[in-house]
Image (cartoon, rainbow, N blue to C red; front, side, top):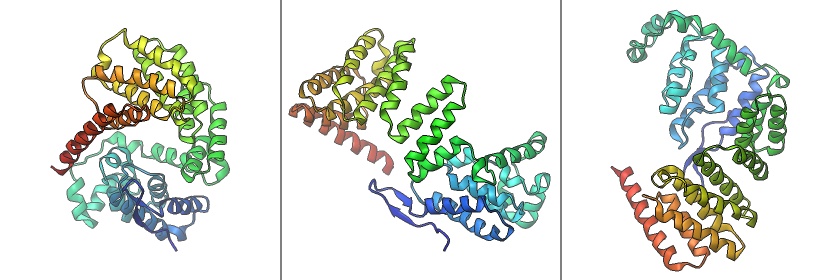
Length: 347
């Protein structure tokens, strides 16, 4: 049975598709054994992915949307033009991120004439979307790039694609192997550093992220960059249950903040305070927890505004440090901010 779109609510009260991963696995199997007979199945799976994205609480393109579109476009059947248009216009993210070229690959310059004859309602929507001559000239190279991204054999997949795939399916060991293989083949140290930072974070390899951030901190030139990196370091240490070794970064951050003022009114300050509160809330060492919370409170008082998640983190940290009056104050402010946000959504 084909993996239909099946909606449920997750623990965060967000609508998700229970069969999303199974659908992607099915499309991958078809990619490596592509046959004419599978056109209707691919068409169905692509339609299910579109329905999933329309109805669940995620946004943007997915692996299945891209792969389904590629496989379906391989048949160059103009009957699928409306489906590609629908995929393009699921939401603002797909409108900007999903390739318009899928609609034009089957018939190229004859697309508008075909749509006007066979899909008049769709034609009303696209009749003013006149593509340039260069757009049509580049369609062949665009398709060649799509083919290179979707090889016919698993052995021809690149390591980064396999990292993303194994991460998606939850095989962290294989994902780690492929991202490390990818890094060994790269010469651009900056690209490797940035990519591995986010990859190791996704894999839960927080110690590896910390090593990268420490190098970045030693090379940072501006106070702003140093504060950003220290905030990231505190987040990683918090993910490791706030070991005492990270406390040294609080004094360093405090010294950097004293050299400039605009951190108080921008996201930079909020990011640091939020990370500091999270670290304090999870620290097992009572003395270090209180001291780190003290730094966070002094910085927090300097901020011109406080967002909801910062207030929640502030309550957790102060409650952890037995600062009950302050904890109640943070709780009250968080509730007020939550009510303000909910009211905005009801308008």
